[in-house]
Length: 48
Image (tube, rainbow, N blue to C red; front, side, top):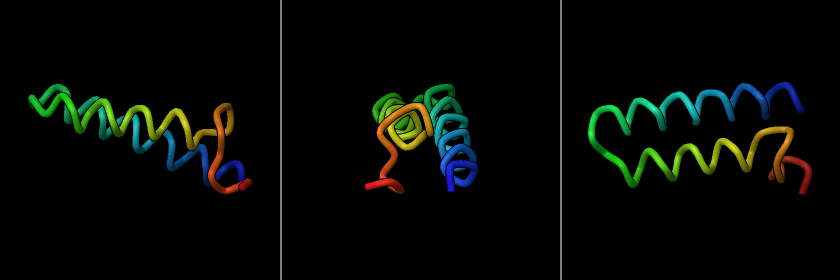
C-alpha cells in the first residue's frame, strides 16, 4: 500500500510542477502539497 501512495504522490508533485511552469500557480501549489501529504513520509490518507 505504501508503494501505491508513493506513486500517487510522485505523480501529483510532477503534475503540480507542470502546472506551475504553465502559469497555474495556485493549482500547482495545491497539487504539490497534496503529493507531500499523501506520500509515505507525510500523513497518508490510505493509513487513516
